[in-house]
Image (cartoon, one colour):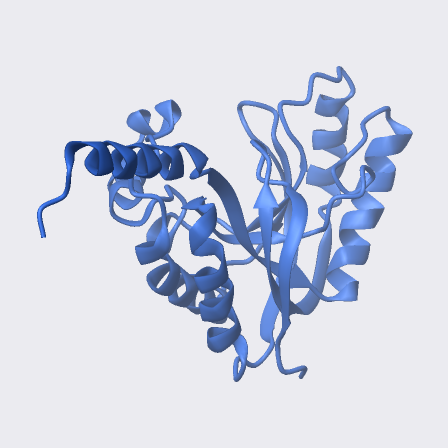
Length: 225
């Protein structure tokens, strides 16, 4: 059947409209820590608050460790959630240890998590399963160009912080400008936060530019120890 020029024009217009409606979103697949770990974050946040700094915890964002954060077309989200559910159905709770307080060169502030084998394996499993669904047109973040190893994993998996570049942590502050921060860094260097617990669930959520969860899309409990 030969299509008329008018029908072709209509179909082309529809395809362009669908393309215009397509929306790319940042999605964070993350580990939710058990209560003992979260309490440690709460205690550190309280100390920061006493010194004039409001952590993400104090602002009401979920305490989490990012396992795989990248960009997806909105249409891919149902498939993403189905894959995470499938991968976590038989997943035992993962041991987790919070240990240390980091202030980066750009004044991002973390409570660090130990990169133990089970946590690395969980992150790797999710990355391998979910990376084929990502938005392949997502641009490389400019800062990644300065880190060849991170650039290589971004180009392959859509994130600069996976596999050997996975550095688990719980973010408290981003680009903090408070003059009290150096004193807090010194305080926690002398008395670093520490707690032992486990990953109780894997969550999926929309993320802002700082990686914080603005909307939880799915919550998948792991088998408790």
